[in-house]
Image 1 (cartoon, rainbow, N blue to C red):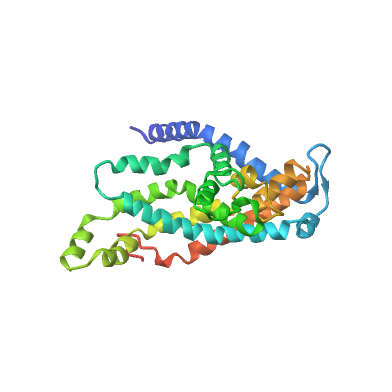
Image 2: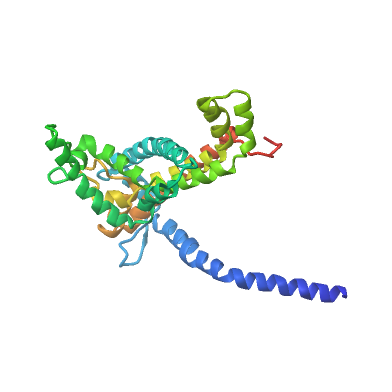
Length: 300
């Protein structure tokens, strides 16, 4: 085959590859990059989604700090992330550890714990609202039957965020599935050596299982931070940011200002503020990932 024929063949393969990639590229451009650029522009404008945007510079980024519940929403978002992420990692890890046992019927329990993940988020929120209701919820009925006082859950300021964090554990089946995959990736050789050396269950857990699944820990940590900082659906469906802003988060506030108050410029500024926070936290995690062990990576 001549050089020109090889070049034509290579060119044809390249064009074919780009044709197959074209739907993804077009979709990414139209539904991700373009809205991203437009929201960045709107963040520097006064825009109500009806009239033409008016350029106002960085005024939105300054004025948002004086908006009602903004500072409180920032604090609530960080509180939710800093509590729910470690709690979710801990609970999903030990749940997956329990469900990794090779027992008869264990797959049924795995499916049951994963079931909340595939349920619609709105339906789950409505269900949780009924279960945790201060007046007619089943949990308070049980407390009343036992002669104990009713627990306010989402109805009181000092317990609403705790209840929201507790609800976050409802969807830990997704992390559980990733943990199970991480456990499967650990070679049985390590456990056999630990057993021969006389290592007990706790020694094996802290010296074999956890060190060998640090890539899984790292992945769940990063995704947990990103998801927790964008918490929206439970707030919207269950509490509407209340009571008195106790569960209002940045994502919920962005929705309110953008689609209820029609202050798209201010909402875009808040969205970019949230984006910078998430990106900064993610970069910090990546910069401090020396504790992650990748088997076969000699550079580490």
